[in-house]
Image (cartoon, rainbow, N blue to C red; front, side, top):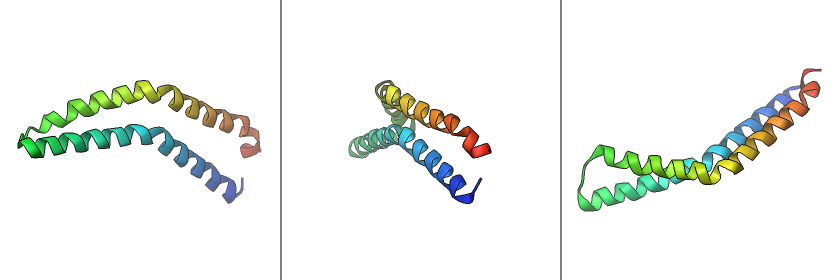
Length: 89
């Protein structure tokens, strides 16, 4: 296996990981920012207040983006397994 193939596989893996995790991380970031602005304006300094909205938003995002994320993971896995003989041999 040439170094170009290894780098290409690693690039595809990192890109797929970022595509799968990106929407949920962005959703948690936006909700955390909104809660932080709310806490700053109302001067509520409760540390646990930020966790519940983030957990709920990530779970809702998982329900909404779950089928798309699963199809991306399955496509990547199918691509790896279908080209396995090319990588090994």
